[in-house]
Structures are given as structure tokens and as C-alpha cells.
Length: 342
Image (cartoon, rainbow, N blue to C red; front, side, top):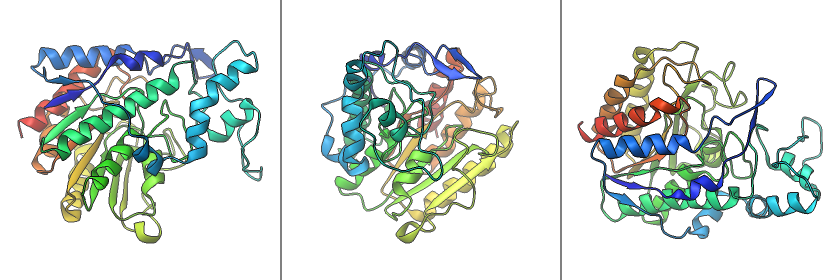
């Protein structure tokens, strides 16, 4: 399996995030990448590739032009105001407020943000573009006859909607890759999100489409971020009705229960019969993850990786979450090993 990554992710590393009423060291940190690379190399994943230049044409099929302009210019506008810290929104357009993009950067941040724990820094835009390019390069490898590939993306992407960032995400790498498959001739693509947190951005992007099947296994939004999407009754609208499947699960969910949801999702994928499968791979389902509440153990990732392999589709793994930093490498590697040994 070819692994696509580079060092540009280090350009995005906020000094802190808001958590529990405090400014804490970000859970989404560069060490996550380091532990994954180390574990991959220790387990024989030595075919590493650097990403090509980002194809903005595909990105623009997923993200709104005004949102991309915002991401590109946000830091310069922030600096122009003379602000000393990192760019974090302080006001958002809540219910019954005008949904208009303000001119001032403080208002723009709130307008385009879905979760205010996520800061923008001087290197965020470059890191986000590079992360999307990693997903695109890995997708192209599969379109050119590789059976699988792993896009080691950072920052992650599945919380980024067509015109919203947040949850550590800026560009939706999995969605961009899925669109890339369609552009390369696939008729239908499935996205399976196994991150602990619901892939609200990916759902939003494809909610009215039938050429991308979206399935997400995640913490019940009544107790878990992002709280406002991810319920089981969200099935899609218009042409997309019946092509969106959510599997919300309660605190302390063990692998046995989680696996039942995965088997159901795999059955849905098989019935849909897509030409390619994109897996939003988050390993924050791990029992010791600091911001999640499922109870999967490291060995469970081998087993469910095998289930993914048995689907038998060209498969692109796109890295999302996982914040038990010292274990993120082994858990990620176990999914890939299970997949290859299925």
C-alpha cells in the first residue's frame, strides 16, 4: 500500500484551543503524524510518496468560492487589524441573525466557522491545501490501478462543509477525493466515516446527491461533538434521499456493538455497488482517547480493517481524528494491516 504524506502539516500548529473553559494545548498536534509514520515504517509500510500540486478545480467543486477566498485571505486580514494572537472567532450568526458575510475579519471568522475551538494561523492555508493535495494524489494512484492507498492528511477534513470550517478541519479531504474519483470516471463512490465524531461536513456536501453514498459511525450527537448533525433520521434530501446513513452510538460503546454498525454499513455499501470506497479513518474510537467515549481496543482495529478489506473495492484511506497520541500509530497501522490481510 502506497502512503502519501509530507511535512507541510507542521505549518499549522495553533498554540492553544478552547476546551472545558480553558485554553489548552491542541489535541490535534503534529506529534500525531510522527507516531503514525513511525508505526507504519516499523510495520513494513515503506512505499512513501509526496503529493503533487493541488488541483483547485476539484476543490472548487466541493467548496464555495467565497469560503475558499476567506481561507486564503483570513490570516492576512487578521494581521492587518494588528491582532497579536491566533485567529479565533468571537461571535457567530446564531438563530434569527442575518446570514451575511461581514467585512471585518472578526465577523468573517464567525460567519465561516462551525466550532470555535479551531484557530487559524499563518501557515493554516498552506497546510490545508497540502493536506487536500495528499488526498488527491492518493486518489489518483487508485484511479491509475492501485487497489488501495493511504492519505496521511493533516489537518483532517471531515468536519469541513462546503462553506464552513471547524473541528480542526478546513478543506474536506475525503469529499475532494470522492469528487476526484467521479471526475476520473467512477459512476458512484461510497464514503465510510469511522471517526468517533460524525462527519457533518461530508454529509452536508453530499446530502442532496445520489452519486456519493455517505455512512458514518459515531458518538450520539446528543452527547458528542458536533452535536447538531449525525442523527439516525438524517437520510438525505432530493436526489440524495436514501443515500445517507448515520449510526449514532452511546457512551461506553464496546467493539461488539460498534462492529454490528460497521457490518450494517458494509452491507449498505455492497448493495450500493460503488466503483470506489473512501474511508474517513479516525481512530479516536480508542478506549483511551481523551475527547471521545467509545471503548475499542488496539486489537479491534485489525479486525475491522479486515472487514473493510472483504468489501473488495478499490479503497482510499484518508486520515481524520485520533487524539490518544502515543497509540495513534499502532491503531492506524492495525486498520491497514487488517485490510491488507483480509
